[in-house]
Image 1 (cartoon, helix red, strand yellow):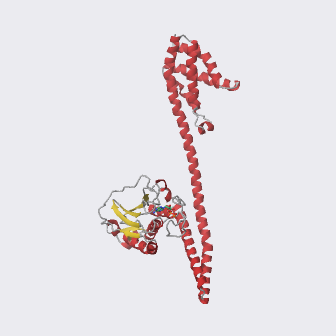
Image 2 (cartoon, protein in one colour):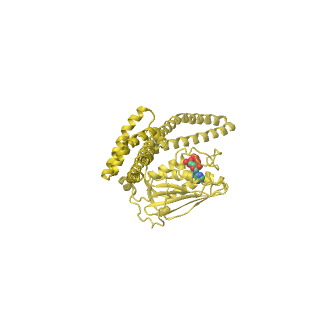
Image 3 (cartoon, helix red, strand yellow):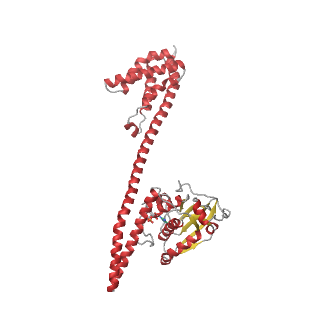
Length: 421
Ligand code: ADP
């Protein structure tokens, strides 16, 4: 007997067995029998034509409407159903046909079922991938919304805090004038404390404003010719007292790129370097060493700030560039330059924003965080070695810079998790 005739022979016991084992309740069974009839027709057509693609439309229909619970619970319902169908086909063929004919039928039907299983696996995976990417998109949108409201909050809070701070500053200055007349040294000392507080608060507010400016892509640079070495000297001068107080050594190495004029925003670059150096001071125990060095690369200058401090764990090395990250050690000291002196966690995000606005990138290397062994951290900053101003008026003002940037002495080699976009 031909295989399609064998199929017709076992159709009815097959239908009863499959529907009984899979659909509970008479209504469900009736609806299900229609589907199974359709499937059986497709199998017959696939066998007659030798083309398993006859099953495609039924399989597509079965896999096109997975329930949300199925997707959430990662259930492969259609694959499970097909496995059941395969097993029932085997049983029904063996029970209803002579051994040889049952074997004939099963040998013919097996490649068709294999095709169906592969197709279903692909369709169900595609449905799951679509579901997961929809979920991810929703999470991404929620995070972006959260980040926007965080950014708006920072901006509003910073501007709201500025007014009362100016008031406090004004009254403190009036008290100082009054005290100067009466000459009370105790009040003078208290006023110094108030002024330090005011100054610190102003710095935090300024940082909050900078962060919201960067977040909203509003940072505009004032490009002027500068000499990196000059910026390093200014930094040294600015932080001299803290370095001395903490018994640290600051080494500023001379390198090719530090001696040439480049176009950059000197005030913003100073702020970026200041943040990195201040951190090196904060996270290096007394008597440690901080080294500023660099090299030229094709089109870029790389600056490194290496310290002999407590280091940064690999999992935190990209997190620290996010605002309010504070993912490092537990901070206890409130002083700005004291060992492990805490801060609001805005310094590095601002630094990154400034460097990226210049077209550069920043990343950190450290073998890990260890307060006993102090493996140290090295911050790498790449900035473009611009010898031409983007604004022709500026170039007219300062003239064209010497294009003789020395031959590069290295190849750019930022690590895979560099924070650049
Ligand atoms: P803040 O210093 O205000 O906490 P930053 O954005 O400047 O914020 O730094 C974020 C975090 O990065 C710090 O809290 C610290 O954990 C870590 N960090 C930054 N620089 C260093 C460094 N040189 N050595 C060790 N940890 C560092």
